[in-house]
Length: 206
Image (cartoon, rainbow, N blue to C red; front, side, top):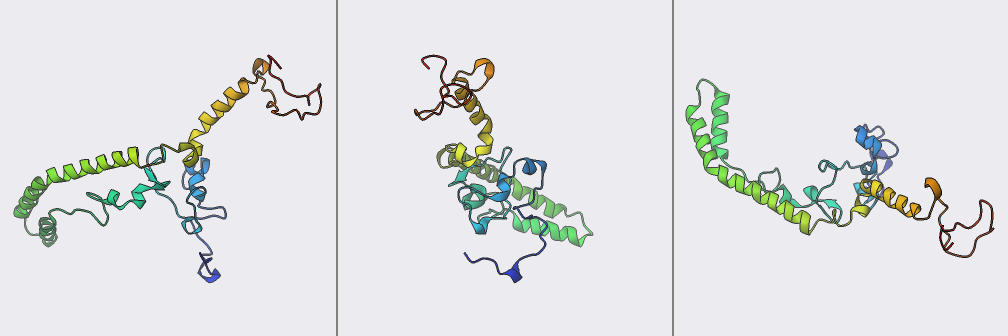
């Protein structure tokens, strides 16, 4: 990928600072992981591009760590804006809008025609929405890797678990009254046998 020529670079950009994307919310100030696009599948041409919000805790169904709301076209399908969007009752809708724009009448006939059309189409719309939800559930369970590799994809969501495991491991080293020992040396290459620099020992069979 070629670097951007100097004369094409924007000198002042409101959404970017010298480190990456500028935080827009207190959550991004606290956890700026998404602002830098580091990690797997990060490329220069994708840097400085603000990613979509992906649910309550920013965890969404993903394919190869990419958000499927963006990468998978079927998700933009029935009932959503996108290349595969189904459109219903366009003629009746246009007739009612034209009648309302003209003015001078109550548009009862156009309104009744649109209502009848929507009534006929409603079951299809509901079934399409249910099918879309079923597909997303299937994709999340069978294809998405967000839930099989949480520690590599979203490390910052698992810090509390990692810290708890570290605390358990250090507690098993036998620190008295909660004082954490130095990590046990797995070799014999220690310097002294007494004092603070001595080899850490377990309380039994040390």
